[in-house]
Length: 166
Image 1 (cartoon, rainbow, N blue to C red):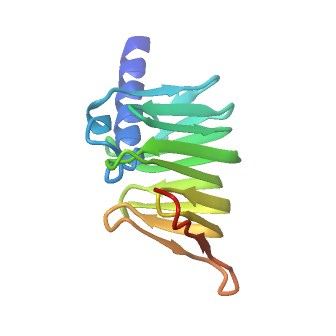
Image 2 (cartoon, rainbow, N blue to C red):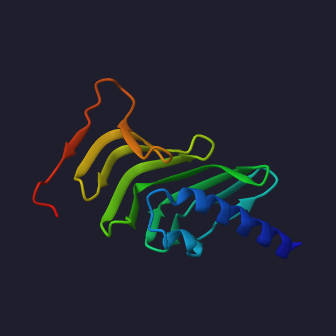
């Protein structure tokens, strides 16, 4: 019974991490790499559809690396519903197809698989070859690859573009 739970847990985590990997942005070779999840004290509650890592987790797939202080994956009908990661901050880095690096940090990253969107909250900073985007809350649409500021209408979105950044 223990091996069955461990096997089911691995399938669930692997499915979730595949969707979390922001595959539309990653290197083609990253999408073919094995996904690993590391964390102390992770608990899989299959009867309620949750895998929780209260002491933090690190996700790796090729050049992608995401680290958080807390992680929660919810699943339903053998599919991932959401992945929530919090930290001070959650950090993500990944190499893009053009060879540049993308760095993302936020206090909270909430991925909604059905909507194909990642919601980033709290001191959000996205750094890529175009420049640096900052704000308090941003929505990242994985299908359209659009990033937009969300939340309070008074929220300020900031983008710095360095013309000397080649």
